[in-house]
Image 1 (cartoon, rainbow, N blue to C red):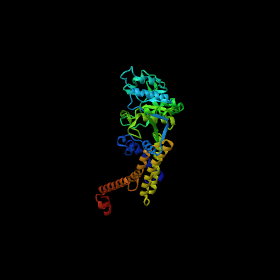
Image 2 (image 1 turned 45 degrees about the horizontal axis):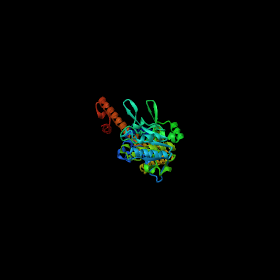
Image 3 (image 1 turned 90 degrees about the vertical axis):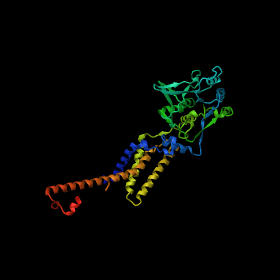
Image 4 (image 1 turned 135 degrees about the horizontal axis):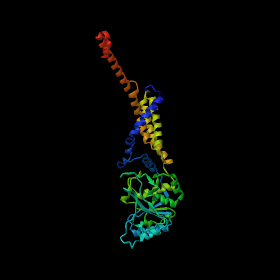
Length: 404
């Protein structure tokens, strides 16, 4: 195999690298040292892109969504806030707080305010037990019929306690009943066309576009003073400082759930969906880049300063991948997962060395072949001795020394 043409040899080494990478990928593609320790087991390249994109000096203040923080408010204060918001004519109102029974059900102004608020979407929680999914009703679900209906406020993450929230779910199927998520339900009221585009995509999960976006956050006392900030917009009601509703995201390890709902809704309304390549596309890119670095290595390795040039090109290619991935993500919303490419490019040169140690001249196979030849010659020599009875009669002194 050492006499293979360079292109064929490069193809063989690339195939070997891909096979090894495929076996090792689940352990070796984690570049978690870029990430905080608590996220080490759950890091993707898009997290790095999002962090870089979010560091841009100019951030956009979302023009469709306003958050009203209800931290520390009593139910009576929340009722007055909802009445004030309804007076300001928002496009829709989404509530991200679930309630238990009040201390005095006969003196509960919040129930009336919830029932009268226009285009209000109230929260429900979808839970799971051994029998499947079920709706966990809160107190007001039974006594209030909101004009905007009910929607699931579940934060969609992968299984596990320390999971990073990157995607949102547009709807949940509970016992054959389709229940929209809060962002999807609010988008349907605010912009039916945008909601229809989401449905046409047909994805179970959509990646949240977190980068370079901010939301105006008001307190209840700001509502009437900022009538213009609420009119015609979607208002999200929730708690910013609730420690029980904090989640890990690519931007923050303690992001409030209400903010995640806002980012998800903004992704729908703006149509800035992230396009993620398939695993097959990721591996095709990895194979092409690996072949390039291997082919260059084969061409330069025997030249003066060849190994140094190869290593320099290898480092340059790795940097180019990270830079290209970041630019493409920021400008075109395409998530190029270069994890496989970084792995194969890094291992490609090492694979060349392993290939050479095995197949090239004086390599492992050549050494084994020489050993076998010597053993055969020695066996043949001993057979002649047995047949002739005397070594001097079989070969000269030099031949004896070589056989022994």
